[in-house]
Length: 401
Image (cartoon, rainbow, N blue to C red):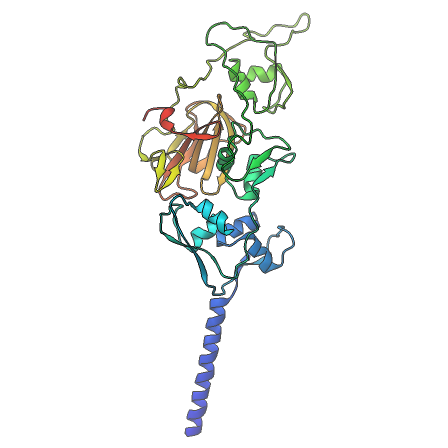
């Protein structure tokens, strides 16, 4: 019996040791992600709260190319001592992330933050000892042929709205060789073209025969400047779309028809111009329920007004314009940006669904989206911004509510 008891105790000890080894392995095993269609390293890094450099290092990747079905280590479950940062007055997640060489998504994951709101003296985890650091963030990008603001935003994980503000952009037109800043604090780095004065209303002012396209202009703004119908401007220049180039000469009236051809009626049809102070903008929602105003909120600047409602509530274009962006953006969720005359842009964020596409011309009051809570949103609402020359202005300057 003593021998049986000895072997029984020995077996129990071995089983206990094996149990602790298994438990240790589970606690410290690497987390694996199987690559699905649409995945890329930036999205995986954001999802798992790590850096792109860490994923490259753990998987010995020599490039950012990954394939569907590939198994990637996306988190090392090795216990490390955390590195802390105590929030000071004036700090925000952007400046803290840049200072410590990590991403905002990592800080939010490590500290289980539900929003980007932080307060003075708050203690935040900003990394771990021995962690692979992301290389210093590039401060600006030189535009290459074929690039757009949207493609640049995805490349550097900076929202399009931030790029517009950092560079004080008046429109979405960018050109090869242009410097696009990836951080704030460079006001005046991108020259802002002088706006064309609007043609006087109902004065019968003569319209020149042609117009030479300048940097920052688009077909929609030129049509509004001369009070012309966009369809006429396309037809007179034999344009199949709205793409124009700097230096292109546009005809502002119907060209003389061949002998015997039937003339087109109403060749200089005009539409009322838009002008600051008399825009007659409408609200983006039918029922006003203001959840948050423009200005400081939790020690951080809130760049728009939040209108609350129920999921699926229609969202309207406040002014006529052209859709410059319609896609998912980090933080903003489903986002729409509409470009208007006079260097005005309006922004509609956290939408349940976007109902318009880039390049589409919209009329005032058109339903462009439905209200939701995509992106960093704790409740159903539309975040609305009003920007002039890329700078956020209080929407109460645009309309009363």
